[in-house]
Image (cartoon, rainbow, N blue to C red; front, top):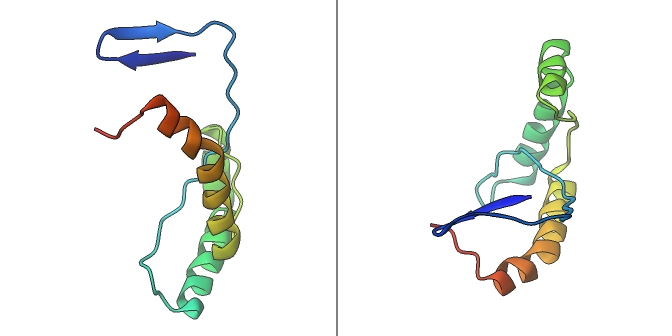
Length: 94
């Protein structure tokens, strides 16, 4: 694994990292549940279209659709997993 810093790249030998990446549009807070459900349903259908599915698989993605509740849980779980590590390492967004 290689990380970059202001002093240059650093190689960490034997490091292993396993995480999930989710590509999803975030919606404005307070969006009505019926609108959220419709968008989630439509997006889940689109990622299963043959041309879209094929392209996503070529890019190394696993095309699935999440309900808003499941996606929110995924985000919370990832935050709980990585948040303390990010804070302890002093990582900041520039």
